[in-house]
Image 1: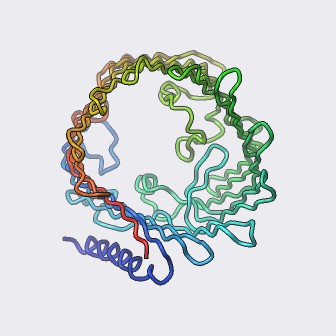
Image 2: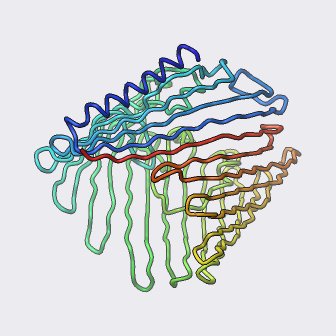
Length: 451
Protein backbone atom coordinates (compact mmCIF):
# COMPACT_ATOMS: atom_id res chain seq x y z
CA UNK A 1 0.00 0.00 0.00
CA UNK A 2 1.29 3.44 -0.86
CA UNK A 3 2.78 5.70 1.78
CA UNK A 4 0.13 8.37 1.37
CA UNK A 5 -2.54 5.71 1.80
CA UNK A 6 -0.99 4.56 5.07
CA UNK A 7 -0.79 8.14 6.30
CA UNK A 8 -4.42 8.72 5.39
CA UNK A 9 -5.60 5.59 7.19
CA UNK A 10 -3.46 6.47 10.20
CA UNK A 11 -5.02 9.93 10.32
CA UNK A 12 -8.51 8.45 10.16
CA UNK A 13 -7.72 5.98 12.95
CA UNK A 14 -6.20 8.69 15.15
CA UNK A 15 -9.30 10.86 14.74
CA UNK A 16 -11.52 7.94 15.74
CA UNK A 17 -9.33 6.97 18.71
CA UNK A 18 -9.22 10.58 19.93
CA UNK A 19 -12.99 10.88 19.83
CA UNK A 20 -13.54 7.60 21.67
CA UNK A 21 -10.88 8.17 24.34
CA UNK A 22 -11.53 11.83 25.05
CA UNK A 23 -15.30 11.87 24.80
CA UNK A 24 -15.89 10.12 28.12
CA UNK A 25 -14.48 13.08 30.02
CA UNK A 26 -16.26 15.87 28.17
CA UNK A 27 -19.58 14.53 26.87
CA UNK A 28 -22.36 12.11 27.72
CA UNK A 29 -23.25 10.99 24.18
CA UNK A 30 -21.14 10.05 21.16
CA UNK A 31 -22.87 9.10 17.93
CA UNK A 32 -21.74 8.76 14.37
CA UNK A 33 -21.74 6.74 11.21
CA UNK A 34 -19.35 5.21 8.68
CA UNK A 35 -20.12 4.75 4.99
CA UNK A 36 -17.61 2.81 2.89
CA UNK A 37 -17.77 2.33 -0.88
CA UNK A 38 -15.53 0.16 -3.02
CA UNK A 39 -16.28 0.18 -6.73
CA UNK A 40 -14.85 -1.37 -9.86
CA UNK A 41 -15.44 0.38 -13.19
CA UNK A 42 -14.69 -0.43 -16.80
CA UNK A 43 -15.68 2.22 -19.31
CA UNK A 44 -15.09 3.58 -22.79
CA UNK A 45 -15.64 7.21 -23.68
CA UNK A 46 -16.93 8.42 -27.00
CA UNK A 47 -14.11 9.83 -29.09
CA UNK A 48 -13.92 13.57 -28.67
CA UNK A 49 -15.48 13.61 -25.20
CA UNK A 50 -13.63 15.86 -22.76
CA UNK A 51 -12.59 13.81 -19.73
CA UNK A 52 -11.00 15.49 -16.74
CA UNK A 53 -9.19 12.34 -15.68
CA UNK A 54 -6.26 12.73 -18.07
CA UNK A 55 -8.40 12.97 -21.25
CA UNK A 56 -8.78 9.20 -21.29
CA UNK A 57 -10.94 7.33 -23.77
CA UNK A 58 -11.48 4.34 -21.51
CA UNK A 59 -9.93 2.27 -18.77
CA UNK A 60 -10.35 0.54 -15.44
CA UNK A 61 -10.91 2.22 -12.09
CA UNK A 62 -11.13 0.97 -8.52
CA UNK A 63 -12.14 3.93 -6.35
CA UNK A 64 -12.59 3.57 -2.59
CA UNK A 65 -14.21 6.15 -0.30
CA UNK A 66 -14.84 6.19 3.43
CA UNK A 67 -17.20 8.82 4.82
CA UNK A 68 -17.22 9.30 8.59
CA UNK A 69 -19.24 11.51 10.88
CA UNK A 70 -18.89 11.98 14.65
CA UNK A 71 -21.28 13.93 16.87
CA UNK A 72 -20.66 14.84 20.50
CA UNK A 73 -23.69 15.88 22.53
CA UNK A 74 -24.31 17.06 26.07
CA UNK A 75 -21.08 19.02 26.20
CA UNK A 76 -20.66 21.75 28.85
CA UNK A 77 -23.28 24.49 28.57
CA UNK A 78 -25.42 22.13 26.49
CA UNK A 79 -23.15 22.46 23.45
CA UNK A 80 -22.62 19.86 20.72
CA UNK A 81 -19.86 19.28 18.17
CA UNK A 82 -19.80 17.66 14.71
CA UNK A 83 -16.81 16.43 12.69
CA UNK A 84 -17.11 14.95 9.20
CA UNK A 85 -14.39 13.80 6.79
CA UNK A 86 -13.80 11.61 3.76
CA UNK A 87 -10.89 9.31 3.01
CA UNK A 88 -10.49 8.46 -0.68
CA UNK A 89 -8.25 6.40 -2.90
CA UNK A 90 -8.33 5.11 -6.47
CA UNK A 91 -6.23 1.95 -6.50
CA UNK A 92 -6.13 1.77 -10.30
CA UNK A 93 -5.20 5.33 -11.24
CA UNK A 94 -2.58 7.89 -10.22
CA UNK A 95 -3.36 10.68 -12.69
CA UNK A 96 -5.30 13.92 -12.34
CA UNK A 97 -7.10 14.46 -10.07
CA UNK A 98 -4.74 12.98 -7.49
CA UNK A 99 -6.48 9.95 -6.00
CA UNK A 100 -3.40 8.44 -4.34
CA UNK A 101 -4.98 8.40 -0.91
CA UNK A 102 -5.87 11.34 1.33
CA UNK A 103 -8.17 12.50 4.09
CA UNK A 104 -10.25 15.60 3.49
CA UNK A 105 -12.00 17.34 6.38
CA UNK A 106 -15.19 18.73 4.92
CA UNK A 107 -16.96 20.22 7.87
CA UNK A 108 -16.59 20.55 11.60
CA UNK A 109 -18.42 22.91 13.90
CA UNK A 110 -19.48 23.55 17.47
CA UNK A 111 -23.07 24.50 18.28
CA UNK A 112 -23.71 26.37 21.52
CA UNK A 113 -27.47 26.58 22.10
CA UNK A 114 -27.68 28.88 25.13
CA UNK A 115 -25.56 31.99 25.57
CA UNK A 116 -27.04 34.84 27.63
CA UNK A 117 -30.35 32.95 27.69
CA UNK A 118 -31.60 33.93 24.17
CA UNK A 119 -28.50 33.63 21.95
CA UNK A 120 -27.24 30.49 20.19
CA UNK A 121 -24.09 30.23 18.06
CA UNK A 122 -22.63 27.84 15.49
CA UNK A 123 -18.85 28.15 14.95
CA UNK A 124 -16.74 26.39 12.32
CA UNK A 125 -17.06 24.95 8.82
CA UNK A 126 -20.80 24.62 8.20
CA UNK A 127 -23.56 24.86 5.61
CA UNK A 128 -25.41 28.18 5.40
CA UNK A 129 -28.79 28.23 3.62
CA UNK A 130 -29.87 31.73 2.62
CA UNK A 131 -31.66 33.47 -0.25
CA UNK A 132 -32.35 30.22 -2.05
CA UNK A 133 -28.63 29.34 -1.96
CA UNK A 134 -26.41 27.06 0.07
CA UNK A 135 -22.77 27.71 0.98
CA UNK A 136 -20.18 25.53 2.70
CA UNK A 137 -18.24 28.15 4.66
CA UNK A 138 -15.86 28.74 7.54
CA UNK A 139 -18.29 30.93 9.41
CA UNK A 140 -19.99 32.12 12.55
CA UNK A 141 -23.77 31.96 12.59
CA UNK A 142 -26.12 32.96 15.37
CA UNK A 143 -29.78 33.20 16.34
CA UNK A 144 -31.04 35.80 18.79
CA UNK A 145 -34.55 35.28 20.14
CA UNK A 146 -36.29 38.65 20.53
CA UNK A 147 -39.76 37.34 21.33
CA UNK A 148 -41.52 34.00 20.93
CA UNK A 149 -42.59 35.05 17.42
CA UNK A 150 -39.46 36.95 16.28
CA UNK A 151 -35.78 35.95 16.07
CA UNK A 152 -32.76 37.47 14.33
CA UNK A 153 -30.29 35.35 12.38
CA UNK A 154 -26.82 36.63 11.43
CA UNK A 155 -23.77 35.08 9.77
CA UNK A 156 -20.32 35.92 8.42
CA UNK A 157 -17.90 33.59 6.69
CA UNK A 158 -15.64 32.55 3.84
CA UNK A 159 -17.11 29.94 1.47
CA UNK A 160 -15.09 26.82 0.67
CA UNK A 161 -15.32 24.62 -2.39
CA UNK A 162 -17.18 21.35 -2.24
CA UNK A 163 -15.07 18.31 -3.07
CA UNK A 164 -16.24 18.12 -6.70
CA UNK A 165 -15.17 21.62 -7.64
CA UNK A 166 -11.82 21.45 -5.87
CA UNK A 167 -11.06 18.21 -7.74
CA UNK A 168 -12.02 19.66 -11.12
CA UNK A 169 -9.94 22.77 -10.74
CA UNK A 170 -7.16 21.15 -8.70
CA UNK A 171 -7.09 23.95 -6.17
CA UNK A 172 -6.39 23.59 -2.47
CA UNK A 173 -7.74 26.99 -1.51
CA UNK A 174 -10.85 28.71 -2.73
CA UNK A 175 -10.75 32.06 -4.51
CA UNK A 176 -11.01 34.80 -1.88
CA UNK A 177 -14.71 35.16 -1.20
CA UNK A 178 -16.86 36.21 1.72
CA UNK A 179 -20.55 36.27 2.57
CA UNK A 180 -22.49 37.92 5.36
CA UNK A 181 -26.08 38.70 6.15
CA UNK A 182 -28.85 39.27 8.65
CA UNK A 183 -32.47 38.18 8.60
CA UNK A 184 -35.57 38.07 10.76
CA UNK A 185 -37.53 34.87 11.30
CA UNK A 186 -41.14 35.63 12.15
CA UNK A 187 -44.41 34.02 13.13
CA UNK A 188 -47.56 36.01 12.44
CA UNK A 189 -51.20 35.43 13.34
CA UNK A 190 -53.18 32.93 11.26
CA UNK A 191 -50.22 30.48 11.27
CA UNK A 192 -48.10 32.52 8.83
CA UNK A 193 -44.35 31.95 9.25
CA UNK A 194 -41.36 33.04 7.21
CA UNK A 195 -38.09 34.94 6.95
CA UNK A 196 -37.00 38.27 5.48
CA UNK A 197 -33.39 39.34 5.19
CA UNK A 198 -30.38 40.83 3.45
CA UNK A 199 -27.21 39.08 2.26
CA UNK A 200 -23.97 40.20 0.56
CA UNK A 201 -21.55 38.08 -1.45
CA UNK A 202 -18.13 39.42 -2.49
CA UNK A 203 -15.71 37.68 -4.85
CA UNK A 204 -12.29 39.23 -5.48
CA UNK A 205 -11.57 37.40 -8.74
CA UNK A 206 -13.53 37.79 -10.84
CA UNK A 207 -14.63 41.04 -9.21
CA UNK A 208 -18.24 40.40 -8.22
CA UNK A 209 -20.50 41.95 -5.61
CA UNK A 210 -24.07 40.84 -4.98
CA UNK A 211 -26.60 42.33 -2.59
CA UNK A 212 -29.53 39.97 -2.17
CA UNK A 213 -32.86 40.76 -0.52
CA UNK A 214 -34.95 37.68 0.22
CA UNK A 215 -38.40 36.87 1.56
CA UNK A 216 -40.01 33.50 2.20
CA UNK A 217 -43.26 32.61 3.89
CA UNK A 218 -45.73 29.77 4.16
CA UNK A 219 -49.23 29.28 5.55
CA UNK A 220 -51.28 26.12 6.09
CA UNK A 221 -54.98 26.31 5.24
CA UNK A 222 -57.87 24.10 6.27
CA UNK A 223 -60.72 25.96 4.56
CA UNK A 224 -62.12 25.35 2.02
CA UNK A 225 -59.63 22.44 1.67
CA UNK A 226 -56.45 21.34 3.44
CA UNK A 227 -53.51 22.99 1.66
CA UNK A 228 -50.22 24.78 2.11
CA UNK A 229 -49.34 28.10 0.46
CA UNK A 230 -45.68 29.08 0.07
CA UNK A 231 -43.68 31.85 -1.60
CA UNK A 232 -40.02 32.72 -2.13
CA UNK A 233 -38.50 35.90 -3.60
CA UNK A 234 -34.84 36.85 -4.11
CA UNK A 235 -34.01 40.34 -5.42
CA UNK A 236 -30.47 41.23 -6.53
CA UNK A 237 -30.02 44.89 -5.65
CA UNK A 238 -26.60 45.10 -7.35
CA UNK A 239 -28.01 43.92 -10.69
CA UNK A 240 -31.42 45.53 -10.32
CA UNK A 241 -33.58 42.46 -10.96
CA UNK A 242 -35.29 39.45 -9.42
CA UNK A 243 -33.22 36.29 -9.40
CA UNK A 244 -35.92 34.00 -8.17
CA UNK A 245 -39.67 34.21 -7.61
CA UNK A 246 -41.70 31.17 -6.56
CA UNK A 247 -45.36 30.96 -5.59
CA UNK A 248 -47.12 27.67 -5.09
CA UNK A 249 -49.57 25.55 -3.19
CA UNK A 250 -49.95 21.91 -2.27
CA UNK A 251 -53.60 20.91 -1.89
CA UNK A 252 -55.08 17.79 -0.33
CA UNK A 253 -58.47 17.65 -2.04
CA UNK A 254 -59.44 14.33 -0.44
CA UNK A 255 -57.64 11.66 1.56
CA UNK A 256 -56.72 10.00 -1.75
CA UNK A 257 -56.24 12.97 -4.09
CA UNK A 258 -53.56 15.68 -3.83
CA UNK A 259 -52.48 18.39 -6.28
CA UNK A 260 -49.47 20.72 -6.60
CA UNK A 261 -49.51 24.06 -8.40
CA UNK A 262 -46.47 26.32 -8.79
CA UNK A 263 -45.32 29.34 -10.75
CA UNK A 264 -41.59 30.13 -11.03
CA UNK A 265 -39.36 32.82 -12.47
CA UNK A 266 -35.58 33.07 -12.28
CA UNK A 267 -32.82 34.68 -14.30
CA UNK A 268 -29.62 32.75 -15.00
CA UNK A 269 -27.75 35.89 -16.04
CA UNK A 270 -27.77 37.16 -12.46
CA UNK A 271 -26.35 34.15 -10.65
CA UNK A 272 -24.45 30.94 -11.41
CA UNK A 273 -27.03 28.81 -9.67
CA UNK A 274 -25.61 25.45 -10.72
CA UNK A 275 -22.34 26.03 -8.88
CA UNK A 276 -23.57 27.55 -5.64
CA UNK A 277 -27.22 26.94 -4.93
CA UNK A 278 -29.92 24.54 -4.01
CA UNK A 279 -33.68 24.88 -3.66
CA UNK A 280 -34.76 26.38 -0.34
CA UNK A 281 -38.10 24.61 -0.45
CA UNK A 282 -38.28 20.84 -0.52
CA UNK A 283 -42.02 20.85 -1.12
CA UNK A 284 -41.67 20.76 -4.89
CA UNK A 285 -40.58 17.35 -6.19
CA UNK A 286 -41.20 18.04 -9.90
CA UNK A 287 -37.95 18.08 -11.87
CA UNK A 288 -37.29 21.07 -14.11
CA UNK A 289 -36.01 19.07 -17.08
CA UNK A 290 -36.32 21.72 -19.78
CA UNK A 291 -34.54 24.48 -17.92
CA UNK A 292 -31.62 22.22 -17.06
CA UNK A 293 -31.12 21.22 -20.70
CA UNK A 294 -32.08 24.11 -22.95
CA UNK A 295 -32.62 27.43 -21.16
CA UNK A 296 -30.10 30.21 -21.71
CA UNK A 297 -31.72 33.17 -19.95
CA UNK A 298 -34.72 34.16 -17.85
CA UNK A 299 -37.47 31.61 -17.41
CA UNK A 300 -41.16 31.74 -16.64
CA UNK A 301 -42.56 28.38 -15.71
CA UNK A 302 -45.83 26.85 -14.56
CA UNK A 303 -46.09 23.42 -12.98
CA UNK A 304 -48.97 21.18 -12.01
CA UNK A 305 -48.88 17.73 -10.45
CA UNK A 306 -51.53 15.21 -9.39
CA UNK A 307 -51.37 12.16 -7.16
CA UNK A 308 -54.38 9.86 -6.71
CA UNK A 309 -54.56 6.69 -4.61
CA UNK A 310 -56.89 4.25 -6.34
CA UNK A 311 -56.56 1.90 -3.36
CA UNK A 312 -54.08 1.44 -0.47
CA UNK A 313 -51.64 -0.39 -2.75
CA UNK A 314 -52.05 1.48 -6.05
CA UNK A 315 -51.63 5.16 -6.92
CA UNK A 316 -51.24 7.12 -10.16
CA UNK A 317 -49.45 10.43 -10.66
CA UNK A 318 -48.64 12.95 -13.36
CA UNK A 319 -46.41 16.04 -13.49
CA UNK A 320 -46.68 18.69 -16.19
CA UNK A 321 -44.46 21.76 -16.62
CA UNK A 322 -44.80 24.56 -19.19
CA UNK A 323 -41.97 27.05 -19.80
CA UNK A 324 -41.45 30.31 -21.66
CA UNK A 325 -37.83 31.43 -21.85
CA UNK A 326 -35.24 33.21 -23.96
CA UNK A 327 -33.00 31.10 -26.18
CA UNK A 328 -31.26 34.30 -27.31
CA UNK A 329 -31.71 37.89 -26.08
CA UNK A 330 -35.07 39.09 -27.33
CA UNK A 331 -36.02 35.73 -28.85
CA UNK A 332 -38.52 33.73 -26.83
CA UNK A 333 -39.65 30.17 -27.23
CA UNK A 334 -41.81 27.65 -25.37
CA UNK A 335 -41.33 24.17 -24.05
CA UNK A 336 -43.03 21.62 -21.87
CA UNK A 337 -42.41 18.36 -20.03
CA UNK A 338 -44.92 15.67 -19.14
CA UNK A 339 -44.47 12.64 -16.90
CA UNK A 340 -47.29 10.19 -16.01
CA UNK A 341 -46.80 7.05 -13.95
CA UNK A 342 -48.13 4.60 -11.38
CA UNK A 343 -46.94 3.01 -8.14
CA UNK A 344 -48.06 -0.43 -6.96
CA UNK A 345 -47.27 -2.45 -3.83
CA UNK A 346 -47.90 -6.18 -3.40
CA UNK A 347 -48.06 -8.57 -0.50
CA UNK A 348 -49.64 -8.42 2.93
CA UNK A 349 -46.78 -6.29 4.23
CA UNK A 350 -45.93 -4.52 0.95
CA UNK A 351 -43.00 -6.85 0.28
CA UNK A 352 -43.03 -5.87 -3.41
CA UNK A 353 -43.09 -2.30 -4.77
CA UNK A 354 -43.28 -1.37 -8.46
CA UNK A 355 -43.17 2.07 -10.06
CA UNK A 356 -43.63 2.60 -13.81
CA UNK A 357 -43.50 5.92 -15.65
CA UNK A 358 -42.90 7.72 -18.92
CA UNK A 359 -41.53 11.17 -19.56
CA UNK A 360 -41.66 13.41 -22.58
CA UNK A 361 -40.11 16.82 -23.10
CA UNK A 362 -40.04 19.14 -26.07
CA UNK A 363 -38.38 22.51 -26.45
CA UNK A 364 -36.07 24.64 -28.55
CA UNK A 365 -33.19 22.19 -28.17
CA UNK A 366 -35.19 19.18 -29.32
CA UNK A 367 -37.35 16.50 -27.79
CA UNK A 368 -36.84 13.40 -25.68
CA UNK A 369 -39.01 10.49 -24.60
CA UNK A 370 -38.38 7.41 -22.50
CA UNK A 371 -39.60 4.96 -19.83
CA UNK A 372 -38.66 4.70 -16.17
CA UNK A 373 -39.09 1.70 -13.87
CA UNK A 374 -38.29 0.81 -10.27
CA UNK A 375 -38.86 -2.51 -8.51
CA UNK A 376 -38.01 -3.56 -4.98
CA UNK A 377 -38.54 -6.84 -3.14
CA UNK A 378 -38.17 -7.48 0.57
CA UNK A 379 -37.13 -11.15 0.66
CA UNK A 380 -36.70 -11.40 4.45
CA UNK A 381 -36.42 -9.01 7.39
CA UNK A 382 -32.71 -8.73 6.59
CA UNK A 383 -32.51 -9.14 2.81
CA UNK A 384 -33.81 -6.69 0.15
CA UNK A 385 -33.46 -6.41 -3.62
CA UNK A 386 -33.89 -3.15 -5.61
CA UNK A 387 -33.77 -2.37 -9.34
CA UNK A 388 -33.83 0.84 -11.41
CA UNK A 389 -34.07 1.29 -15.17
CA UNK A 390 -34.16 4.49 -17.25
CA UNK A 391 -34.04 4.86 -21.01
CA UNK A 392 -34.37 7.87 -23.30
CA UNK A 393 -34.44 8.56 -27.03
CA UNK A 394 -33.72 12.14 -28.03
CA UNK A 395 -33.67 14.18 -31.23
CA UNK A 396 -31.78 17.48 -31.14
CA UNK A 397 -32.25 20.44 -33.40
CA UNK A 398 -28.57 19.99 -34.32
CA UNK A 399 -29.62 16.78 -36.16
CA UNK A 400 -28.22 14.53 -33.41
CA UNK A 401 -30.28 11.50 -32.43
CA UNK A 402 -29.31 8.85 -29.92
CA UNK A 403 -30.46 6.57 -27.12
CA UNK A 404 -29.21 6.43 -23.57
CA UNK A 405 -29.97 3.99 -20.78
CA UNK A 406 -29.14 3.28 -17.17
CA UNK A 407 -29.69 0.01 -15.30
CA UNK A 408 -28.83 -0.64 -11.66
CA UNK A 409 -29.55 -3.58 -9.37
CA UNK A 410 -28.70 -3.75 -5.68
CA UNK A 411 -28.93 -6.36 -2.92
CA UNK A 412 -28.93 -5.21 0.72
CA UNK A 413 -28.32 -7.35 3.79
CA UNK A 414 -28.66 -6.27 7.41
CA UNK A 415 -25.80 -7.91 9.28
CA UNK A 416 -27.00 -6.67 12.66
CA UNK A 417 -28.71 -3.61 14.03
CA UNK A 418 -27.34 -0.39 12.47
CA UNK A 419 -24.96 -2.26 10.13
CA UNK A 420 -25.91 -2.96 6.50
CA UNK A 421 -24.02 -4.30 3.48
CA UNK A 422 -25.00 -3.58 -0.13
CA UNK A 423 -23.73 -5.09 -3.37
CA UNK A 424 -24.58 -3.45 -6.69
CA UNK A 425 -24.14 -3.74 -10.44
CA UNK A 426 -24.71 -0.89 -12.92
CA UNK A 427 -24.60 -0.52 -16.70
CA UNK A 428 -24.77 2.81 -18.57
CA UNK A 429 -24.57 4.06 -22.14
CA UNK A 430 -25.02 7.67 -23.26
CA UNK A 431 -23.45 10.41 -25.36
CA UNK A 432 -20.53 10.62 -22.90
CA UNK A 433 -19.84 6.93 -22.25
CA UNK A 434 -19.82 4.44 -25.10
CA UNK A 435 -20.32 1.85 -22.37
CA UNK A 436 -19.86 1.97 -18.63
CA UNK A 437 -19.96 -1.12 -16.39
CA UNK A 438 -19.73 -0.77 -12.61
CA UNK A 439 -20.00 -3.02 -9.60
CA UNK A 440 -19.04 -2.83 -6.00
CA UNK A 441 -19.78 -3.06 -2.30
CA UNK A 442 -21.08 -0.52 0.19
CA UNK A 443 -21.17 -0.77 3.96
CA UNK A 444 -23.07 1.42 6.44
CA UNK A 445 -22.66 1.47 10.20
CA UNK A 446 -24.30 3.81 12.72
CA UNK A 447 -23.56 3.94 16.41
CA UNK A 448 -24.91 5.82 19.40
CA UNK A 449 -23.11 5.50 22.73
CA UNK A 450 -24.06 7.01 26.07
CA UNK A 451 -21.45 7.22 28.83
